[in-house]
Image (cartoon, rainbow, N blue to C red):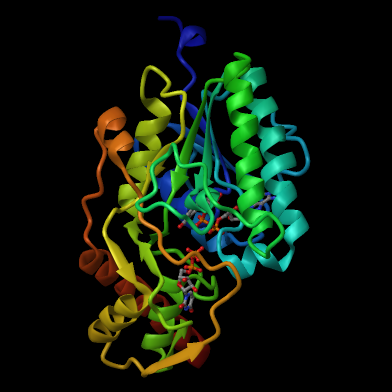
Length: 328
Ligand code: NAD
Ligand code: UDP
């Protein structure tokens, strides 16, 4: 084969400087692909992508996806992970969050369609809102409060899904949609605001763990390496499933149980401090992953204890480095 006929093996990752995005880039570079990372650093960080700086196959473009991409490169895969994911973060500028999912996704879809690239949208379990069926399978239409404080995220992601399936129906792009359930691991921000990073940082600092409400609400926690494996399988599977696919760990825990587990693992943990439950906080969440299992041959491998140990070790190391840096 002539070099000019070599297949393009380049992925664009929007939101690549974030928690999930930076792990996805690790995986893609590890496969020998070239990667273009597009990120505004809204909630991501330069530290998350510093590890790729010396890699000749890595390119970083700092921009907000609300502006159409001006990147003149051929790619065969576009992953859209750009969107603040933590409730306090996405509620800080709700209009920007909504526009990121609608205008930003539209910009990326057009850019991918113009190149004939596959497109994967990082959607969310939040499309099910505060669900009335349990566990949640993909054919459940959801129960979202469209006027509440979470709507900027939930309705933006729902609109992005609608747009993705229109592009697919119209034959404009080969689009796949992953509905991601709560995922945790190294490289979450210490000040991200989500439960796992909050509890670990509080416990390592000897502070009380902030449990919202009575702690009886549930979530199902997926370790990051499992999630990335699922995203890549969904991008590559043939034929295109043509429907959204849940990715998450189906083991369900109450918030109170998670606090107790983290406390047991971190001897310096303080006790629990109860704070008011945020409005519209989903009461129960657990994915039905039968579709991912049958279409992708995927199921999570890392249990909560192992995943928490990895995450705690990473945060402990970061806090040690920060303290010794401050002491110098
Ligand atoms: P994150 O906040 O760590 O990463 C999001 C990244 O997108 C950040 O680097 C941020 O700077 C960037 N970004 C945000 N808005 C942007 C914009 N307008 N233009 C350019 N860059 C922008 O969050 P994450 O946990 O890594 O989540 C990644 C994706 O996965 C998000 O789309 C999120 O909705 C989705 N998701 C994550 C989870 C989870 O539990 N981690 C669950 C469901 C869905
Ligand atoms: N939560 C909590 N304490 C915290 C942060 C979160 O009790 O410091 C609760 C929150 O009310 C929710 C669950 O933990 O019920 C998961 O919250 P997170 O923000 O991680 O993600 P969500 O699934 O709500 O988007």
